[in-house]
Figure 1 (cartoon, one colour):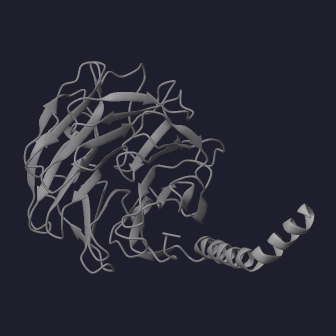
Figure 2: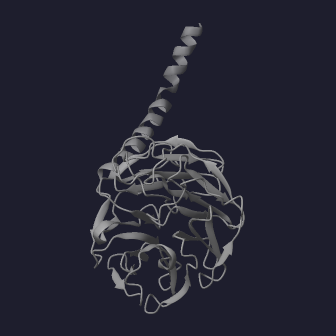
Figure 3: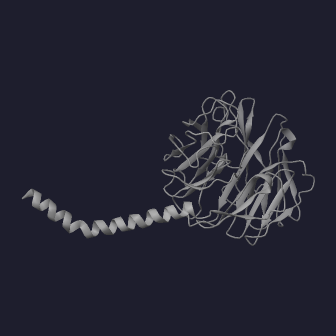
Length: 363
């Protein structure tokens, strides 16, 4: 009786079961197609310098930045123009944030006065020097913005504390933040200005930055626009100057991914990332693909569960908020950015600019 009932239930459920399996197979095939389809198409950049900064405004507008004072812009999604920043030819623009096609803030990284911020409001025709790092021991790493006016700047420790500044006027002026305990660094702890993404923001006032070099890498979190901070350890290998977390990206105030590795051992296998669901209070280790050094991880705008990670080991994506990963490509890049699940770019060594041409990243 029980056996017959169970068999009847299985038979009755078979059509629904097969239907569900068909949908699952279709989704699996779609995901596999993403990894097999050519993910990136090279675009002429007009330069041969190392590019590390990228800000994607829309499917047609993006800005990039790099060594020798280089800033690039596209307004049609295909053609890039090199823009001159007067007096900046010896600077290394490691990060850039674009508000729109005309307005952008570029940050150079380097010791002391080599760390600067420039701003343009006319598409790069003219630039204004907003601030020079006043501390000769300082080294700025990244900038990020919540909106067109409110932003944050992050730098390596001075006198044992990480440096943070904030702006409320679109990057024209920057004020220092002092949190004696919250910004205290561990011995040998620092950050990596490798992609402009060791610092990120979400919502109206959440900010995070990732560290390395010390025995234990950490992610620092601020809930109040950068005024106060709290750090949490992340279970990723560090303990060497070239090793640790290089990037952190958040989908919202709770779900985020940190990624890194060792930039001197670009294909080193092992745990190279971690995931959080509580805003960075606790982290679970994970393997980001491709295995190896990842210098960037970013959420894909408009695709709630999609993240893309990349580095000198190549690029990969997750469609389930970091729980599983697929390889996109093996081409070495420094950073990526997306306007949607189908529109994005990557930049990297020797003036490399790639446009995303793969399948939608939201499945």
